[in-house]
Image: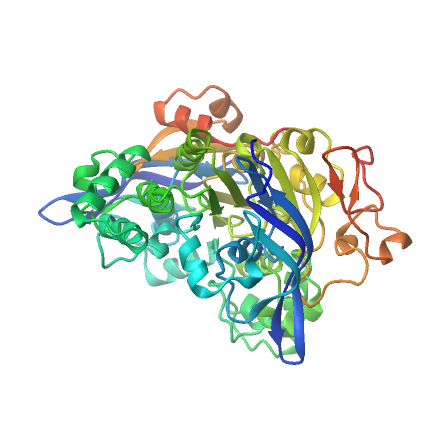
Length: 326
Length: 256
């Protein structure tokens, strides 16, 4: 991990959406740095705000969603000053994104090659033939077999795994310093998922880019991230190096999430977290996880702040620790 | 224990142009005994959902047969077919698209029954069904969008139980749910199976869940069953090349 300026730096970052009578918070007080060359996993369930926090790094927030307070810096520059033109210069060249569903993020009417060529020619004035040669090169690099032929294929002619490789090729063709991957393997089969995860890990170690990997799948996280940030109901509840997070999770939600993803012996009951995820607008005033938490007490009626527990670990809980088990 | 589901040499071919055929399901045979949880795993395109659809009489086999409690739904008389439909019920993957958004929960769970959902008798039935799946009976007047994904999937299970089925086909019933919610629905299926002696055909791509839930499993690949037996044994000592690859690809969650 070299360099001192983080790729992404959230400081007190909050997002809100317009509702009938004002603003409804979606993400609150997010403090997180993704260092240069680091792979950080953003883990959370639906409504945790993980995708919105990532979309903000590309200036792609939905129309009704605004940054309500705090700041987001990309490579040291404050994004609040960015114009649409600034964002266009950044997307693809500095920050790229791979989305969940490669079928809906590729245009079915154009060949996959032309969609990657488009990315190159949006940023560089190169001849079509040069761009095409570069596309074949990057398609080969992301492990698409027979790229000379596949460059003229339409998205529907490729399998889900190949389509996601095309998306990765398009994202990386301008050699960005930061790749944001929003559940890139959720729509894929488990065997394909494994190959995409190892592909991104290889590309990351070759180029030294930073990766923000958004997922709900802790198994994927364990194999590739340096650090894990766990989000629940719009806020960071735990941040720790991956190994430490799995060996000694502190927040009851993290513990519940890890247990829910584990496999037990045949016939044993499955672990789960009782209740359901609270939606934005219905968050309790105190700890947002308290209604589902077995450790909840009267102290949890006050909204807890993030506390540092040890050098690399942060947790938002008044009853942290791994010892209390059900 | 008697045999309740019998699938024999089931084939479903689709025309793939230029005289080619796509063998979605190719010579699949298996039996399920009463009270068993039978898993079918495989990736998309392996044919697992086509097998489920054949069992539900939604996809007509090209050849071979499907029987539940001795009835072949494609050959049976209309009366036997009606019985078949009562005996085999389904829970689909997506609790968002498998319910009419304009129907109330009470009407959804009793749609398969005769009678108005407003009658006193039916209200008792609704309350009993919702109680079975751990949903408060006051939810009967709500609409699907007012429930969480996990609650909706419980309602889908209540709807399936309304006709006292003998076989429940569950096609990826938890893959659309948040990780922390999956256990609730899986435990519910487990306890219903025990309490009602229900037979469950459980379609999934998640080997971990299958290993914990199912008595037996069939691994499907390209329309064929490549391996079948005790899930713990198969996933620990896979013999087929494809099963080996599948087992190796599962991301492992380190124990906390």
